[in-house]
Image 1 (cartoon, rainbow, N blue to C red):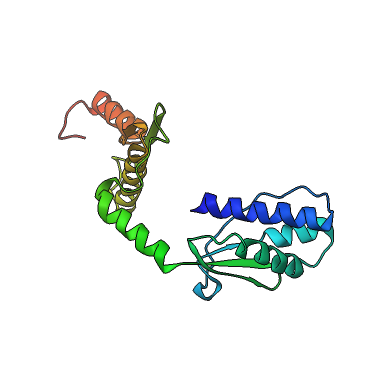
Image 2 (spheres, one colour):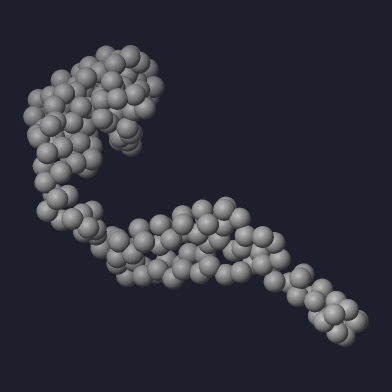
Amino acid sequence: MNEELKKAIYEAVKSQQKSCGCDFDIPEIELEHPSNSKFGDLSTNIAMKIGKQQGENPFTIAENLVKQIQGQKLSSIEKVGAVKPGFINFYLSNEFFASTIEKILDKKDSFGKSDLGKGQTVVLDYSHPNIAKPIGVHHLITTLIGESVKRTYNFIGAKTIADNFLGDWGTQFGKTIYAFKEWGDRKAI
């Protein structure tokens, strides 16, 4: 859906470029989730990028792009609108959400799975508790994060090698060896 929407924005920008006779580089089209849901499900600042490049009012550019996008009749978009200073906001349709839920229910645990990482090997190392100190909750958190990253890479088809080794063996073992050599017996140490 993101790629379809980016393509629609690109087509709108190309159309805008043609109608104004402007020759400008089309900036990278980025979609993001607005922090406030009243601004839609997805948003782009492409009009502001073009406005800066052309020295034009980004809100006017956004309004023109909205008209072009509305003309494309995207099934996943219920509403599209421009807001100042030049954002274009997209509201996803109920049909899109319903079809996505159907896909999730149909595919169950394999929903979203891909072979994007096929043929790649990813090596992860995480946690590394120091055996000379108490193990804390932060070790558990980094272990869980590492395990989650590992499972994500596995889900997209990558071969993963995970390592969770005990860190900082040097100093405490050196002290122990020195103590045995100096005092020679366990009780004295």
